Image (cartoon, rainbow, N blue to C red):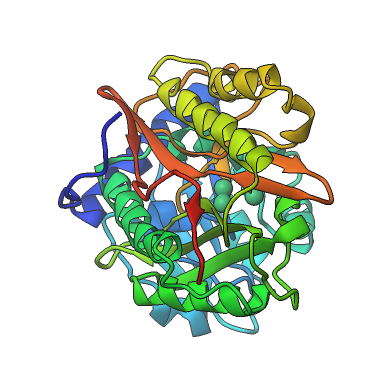
Length: 383
Ligand code: ZN
Ligand code: ZN
Ligand code: ZN
């Protein structure tokens, strides 16, 4: 396994987006889609660099397979668009205009349309009325598999985000973050502040589950005061912007214990540690995604903890915290160089304690590349 080395300089963001646009058009031709309509969600910033606010006012990139793309955007938002005329035109709409009519005019005679998953139903219903006879499908079918394969710009951004999260994990493992006597919520706020200090522009989550709460994978950090000799699972991540690019996500989980671990925890953690490494090692280009899940799950099951591993092995990660591809039974699509995803087995003994280890990994021609290199061992933190 490669460890995260120095971050390569990213390619020019405009060139990267032009290449993505080309790949999308090729895919549209292949899938016989005449026009792509992208509203909220990550496809829009991935292609244009512009992240639309989730307003009720319509923002939509109209991308015909055979013509220029046009961003239909509320006039009051237009100044936030870093407009690159090589990639798309911009059509700001005033408050008295009907934006869905503008979209319909840009779509013209085209009828095979794909629309983003995150488009308000109200807009889609209006579009269906304005463009009668159109056949609709999800833009995710077109863009999802392309966005799952990260280019060098995105790999650099993910590695930078991973490095930033690693510094916070190191502080946790090294006992710099006080646990004993503080509430989970206080520790969560501390982790969040450190994620920002480490360069994240936004904190997406900072789960802190202590004692019996460590057995709840998505535990909401609360008023429980962390005691001595307890397991604490910390799962945190944010979004980091590299240069003037769009932000990319980090996501890491480490498990610590605030005192001498009991033998059962040591045994459980040993299995988990081994399973996580096995799943990472399985993440080789050409391997079905579900095999990454299976490689780790088999070991956990063989050790008798199969029923206590209650979620998939991992999720894709990029502009969104969770995106394609998913490392889950049933996903037989092969790993491609550039796929970025989490590897995060967990074992949860309900009402008692649990543990999870998570890294973000990128599949490369040279094998799996970890974006996180913080120590995986169970750290005893007596602070
Ligand atoms: Zn999760
Ligand atoms: Zn996580
Ligand atoms: Zn995750």
